[in-house]
Image 1 (tube, rainbow, N blue to C red):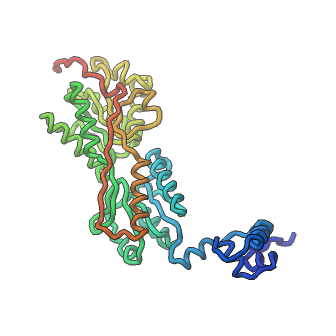
Image 2 (cartoon, rainbow, N blue to C red):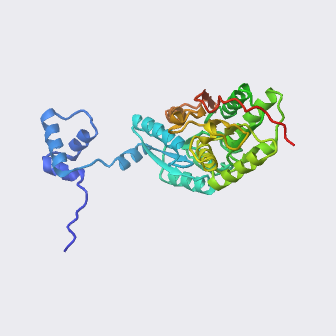
Image 3 (cartoon, helix red, strand yellow):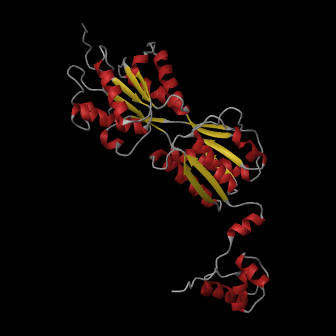
Length: 357
């Protein structure tokens, strides 16, 4: 069979079908005045009949803007980042812009490649959740007029740009202080990779809460690394086998909390066993506070320090569009508050202390 495909209809095709001048079609397509109602209706009927679509790419390029922005996040499958992304997209659509999104997978080289790929497509602006700490590669893009806002983590040294963060240290400090207020003195911290800004800040908040309560910082109670099930099971086993084991856990992000619950379930034999049955004879069950809310946390009774990823995304997007509208004020740094949500797991008192041989 021969190829029966034809090109997209053009404004010239619409003009011929409606029996009007090309300029008349242009005015109707772009909602410009100067065309009488009857002629406009005839042009619109021809547009519908032919299936003509305006070339927004060419139109926006003529105006020096592409009506698009780029968003680089860590992982689109992560609930936190999907909520952030949705808020950015809604704000972009409100401003008549399309959103291009890519995931860096915590890889600095991939982050750079995505950002530069978006820049090559002439996006008007960028929102970046950075994986790396070197953003000097953005200097030529900034000089060319591209605007950028960093979200969740700040840019690396040598890059001056707006940033919107959560109060990571304050949230972790509140979570640890909550456990301390319920009588816990041996609190373990399970965090993400220490090179990640949010993980380092949450560890800092945990340490500050201990110091404020006059409690020593014990490196043996800290485990930092990816939320890998095997790693977390090994870390928990090590902690629970200690001569003086922790009575409470502070987990550093949503994925770590979920994997910790799974690991504890494998130890206790039930999803809620960590809080009901106790993880080993004499321990009496662990208290737990997780950083980040997550699905079913309310049903499981997990106390969390909640961020607001949607507000984080909206704030970053609003700031970006403010810059695109011509705001050239000083670089800004917003830090959004977190809130502690008590649900039961973080309110368990420690078991009666036993002397160890």
